[in-house]
Length: 318
Image (cartoon, rainbow, N blue to C red):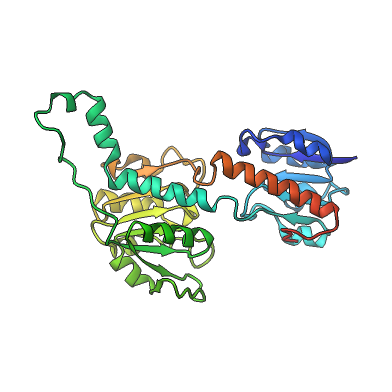
């Protein structure tokens, strides 16, 4: 009987962890603070983690560990080199949230672009009922059609966003952070041109040496004054304090963020204290997390465990 330990099941929401009993005895924890990891995993054959860090310091006391399952795509919380030395398999799940993140990208953009909060409040406050005319034109908004949509990170999510943007009538261009991505369907430009010419700029790239701090004050300053910046990639790609400053100085029209340098966001993060709060839409790292996406993720995770014990190498990192 295998021992399966779930370290931070709360991050998955309401999925049916009972299905794991097919593979063995299951121990579930909502969350696991770092000081309790070693004790909780010491007898595990299989560990499921989302954000809990696993490395030599908390795994060395376990001589039975066979498999670590990342409950996400990114696995920077796992010391894969240590796992390789120990012959511990590591799996992740990719592609489960492509449509979901693309959907959230447009949800946040349209919330900003179409002034939804303002007009919703206008009607609910009773002001519309007092109006002498049938409409309200106090807040102008613009068509997406005919605008230039710039993308940083033309992977699966970036390509999905590009297709939807085209359906809206936008002209899509992209910047390859690696310099190696060549997609004939869209115009590839250098970073300065992307910043200077994009009306909407959305980020869907991973975090690496070339993207960390990419959207700093200098680069944000190169954007159009009526541009919207959207980050659905990784938090540290955008420098929070620089974006807050740029918004307060009206260097760009607005921004939408689902990710932050530190998560949950610090109470003293300058983004929470900007003067014009209507210029910023922030969500708590939920772009990936529709019910359907989490169900796909968990289904694929179960398949990863089955594949491992069947001798297959499906979704194996190590």
